[in-house]
Image 1 (cartoon, chains in turn cyan, blue):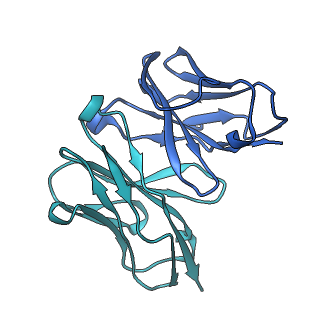
Image 2 (cartoon, one colour):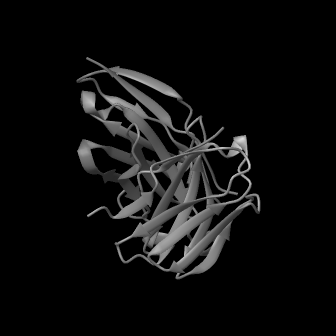
Image 3 (cartoon, chains in turn purple, red):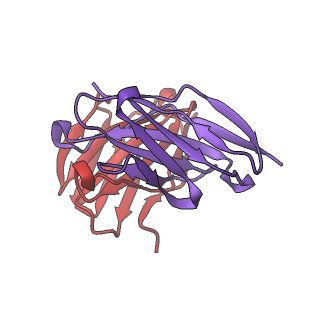
Length: 115
Length: 114
């Protein structure tokens, strides 16, 4: 079975500080990994994805994530957080198992940005 | 133009009623999904259709019935609504599975059952 763990339910950072959101996954084959962001009252927007190749992937809004197979992790980072980054962040795992259409999401990390 | 649109945005209804949520995508995608997000923000897949064919059917009460009249539309009908059905329901679409499974989400429908 595939699963995602986001250990941090809430994180608070000061504007301008760096950010790292943790994500650990369990998947029986090669994982496809995603980070989505959800602003209040909105749907989910894709930040970045990893399928293969370079393990450091760049996304929108200045975010990046690093795939570490040995640690089953796909942590999201941003060097300098802006107040507008306050939102809920979801990590998700998919792949080719069972037709490849299922994404399993983590429980999310709520990011608060202090001015 | 909104890529994935859901209507209505808000739905308030009494227990026991039947209601429908509509979803349309203009991305030309072959696959559509329904998710339920509970009060703790946990997002769980309910159904998925590929070219009008049901391909994912998670453990969902049979009061929930998806219908896909064409590959651009996936509607969700809920019979005999219960308090526990209160949640935000998201529609999403993708080109397919595997590396094509980049899902685009609608803005959600907040269902409140009183």
